[in-house]
Length: 218
Image 1 (cartoon, rainbow, N blue to C red):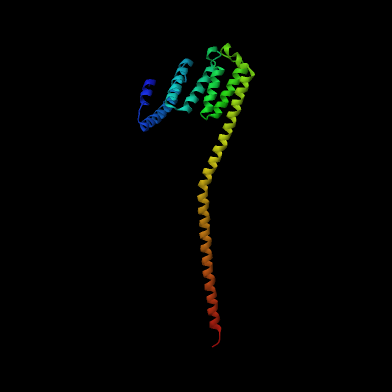
Image 2: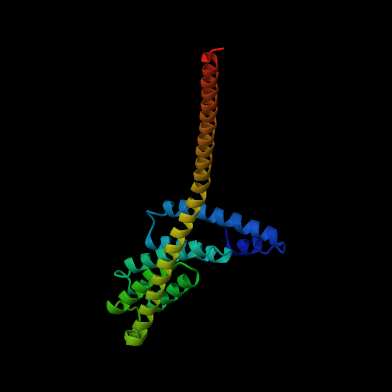
């Protein structure tokens, strides 16, 4: 599959058809990505990086932000792991910062936090690819990254609380009808019991009255 084919497939003027095609392509690419990455596990680093680069571009083209970011992050980690053999492979501060901002903008706050950590590590560890990045040691840049990290952590925490609250409300909405049914059942049972007891008491009184009448001398 080439990018020209993807672009042609997504070029439909029919909004509904375009959405359906995009959805189908997402499912196809997600499935194929996993299969192909498994197949390339024993391949060379360069080969793996080419595969990752292809799928990163493909997911970007079809608008699958989650997988686009996930594969970019994995590719960055692969590059950093192999930077000891080739310094040019190391991920720059610029790249980590851009990735952090894109993750933040798209709502992936935990990923943005990790990217900020990588950017700070890149600076403090002096793991810089090019001398032009020396100015990133400037305190203002470090503070900028730290502020972005703090903001990402706050948003991630807030999102987590919202998810927990949403899950609680969903659970509550499911349990509430059950509780109401249980109360209704208990009410019906209680009412039925009282009714039967009332009839028994009335019948007992009538029996006692009848017995009294029978014992009265004529």
